Image (cartoon, rainbow, N blue to C red):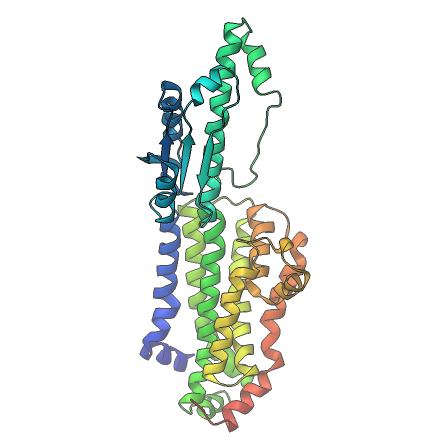
Length: 379
């Protein structure tokens, strides 16, 4: 361990990849999405009717949290060009005669166009534009029924015959920071742990220090591995637990599970990632190839975790392959035990999978020893 302390102290790559870059990732993602979800998305208006009714609807649209009316256009082609130039994300179109048709109950057609180039902005604006279109017809219906002498309760029942009672479990604010940062940041940390774990062994081979390293452990590869990675494990655990304290203690991300689940989850995350990094080097005892495998596996993990795109919507083959990614099991443990507060027994298979990643170096430990003793480094 003293030898590893000197190596970590002399090589600045360890300091950057184990402390500086993870802290930068934490600050970047949590501050980028600190508003919870995008607000004040730019929207345009094409109002060829230009009456008090359409202007009132535009003011209501502008009052929505996610929408900001930034421009008025004289024609649909002009507004469409603005969407294509990325100046606005959507526009609302009132044809001439909209108000008169509304009052005469002739069902005028109000159109709204939105860009789905960005799925998040498109979905949020669709909701607001659809709501404002519904409000327009409801306002006219309310005025007509009031003129005919209907009571407020009758009007409410007619305009909304079924009242929706909506419950968004665990994340009622639809906070993107809550469900994206808790996957992206651990995924980036796993990437750094993968790379540093393979890099540490590769550097022994590159600088021909493998025999010296084994000699200090009396030829016992298990002692050598433990001595090399114990200090790194402590540093990674400190970083992971600081990250957990920051998002759950400072930012108050929701969590229903026991705090001990967080401690266990952080420990499993670090040990499983180190296990995979050592396994990758043992599988291909080459600094370049092992780090390439680690990079590829970590990047694919973001897609296979099932956060951005649900795993149940993927093909059966991809669902089977997803079990080979540590981030998938980490994310499921977080979702089941921390986010929703279920006991660990409900996620035992994912816990067992992470334990398997921790034990993976045993499959290649003799090959690592043989590489240190006999292999010649090839750039």
